[in-house]
Image (cartoon, rainbow, N blue to C red; front, top):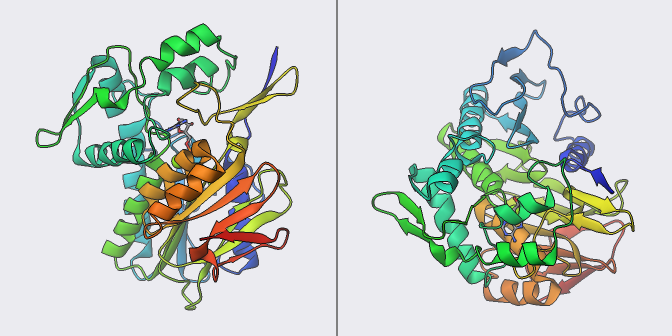
Length: 379
Ligand code: AMP
Ligand code: MG
């Protein structure tokens, strides 16, 4: 018997919102509501455009001149807050794009581009999807396979794709599934935008990277509309446009994986994504109290047991930040630090270890604070 626990990523959003409210950047009104908030009918509601939406969304003007949106997409709660003359139109355009991506990358919809590829092993994909796939495959290479999009059948075997049928697969079952996780078998013909999977038993899932790609795109939309400032949280993955309207830096709280009551750290940022991966986001516990989470070590088929409780990535590039937060979590402290040393021009990182050390890359020296931990910097 296993006790299923799905600690929905919403708690990270709560922390983010709560902190924004403390810092005066985000209204507190929604901070204690449940994830499936029913929105006031007087607000501008829009029925779901995508088949995967389970709720309506609303674009709400705030007293500070911003527009605020809550929606459920990509299996998570999302919030957008945008400032500027065309904030309302920008927010609506961003929601449409999120819903489009939700549909493109869903593993739950049979007509998404991911499901079509998984079923037919060959598909023509739209340009956005090709871009994500290209970045995912580049990360597979640069992380020596720690970031691997072909673990979908392994995630399924553990029950993480349904979040109801959790189980511990046997070693023979996992060894058989690992045989079909060589991403060299994913062939990309960029000009034709065609993707081919040469292994008939391989299935992919872009869940480890797609939210960061989406927040990147949302920032592009906000820029296209000339917005002066914005902050989005897609399941706790935060990305900000420029500075706050008062000219100060955004303050983004990073959740403490073992203490809901306190933030691990606060990052000051402008034009950055701050994206965190941790085993605490989705997991179940067996009868012996062993925790099994959703980030898989491609080498074992088991949840990664790398000595890290969470990894945050701070980068201009949300796609990179999302992929790397997952990958460095798998790699563990030593390899993660080595990776950062080789790519320090593209991101910074915060590593929280299972012995509760808070490590941060040198680039964060002037931008990170923690009320609860001494920050140990590495260069
Ligand atoms: P994230 O929350 O961004 O760390 O992504 C976790 C999700 O990525 C999981 O729910 C899986 O869908 C997928 N995933 C799990 N392990 C890996 C891995 N090693 N590489 C890439 N994606 C993974
Ligand atoms: Mg990720």
